[in-house]
Image 1 (cartoon, helix red, strand yellow):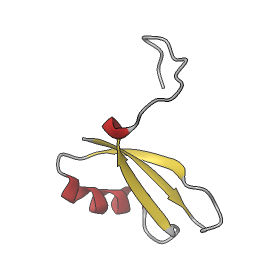
Image 2: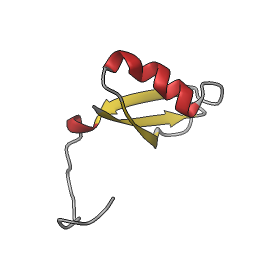
Image 3: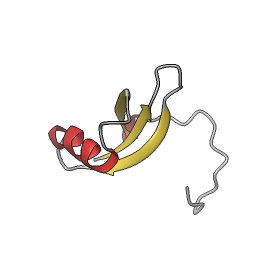
Image 4: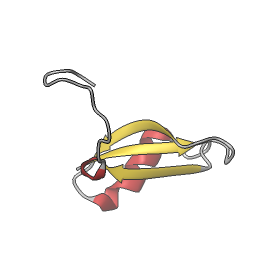
Length: 66
């Protein structure tokens, strides 16, 4: 499953997308995120399943890349 990873380095900052991870089991997500992004700099990291994202506006045309 693909997850979008959001994080911030200070609580006064908004969460921003900092990466995407693919894991077969959600139990592996935390370890893989910390391995890929590190733990020291972040005050918060969250993961959202990509399939849970609901586009509100999307002007992308079929075949466009992200």
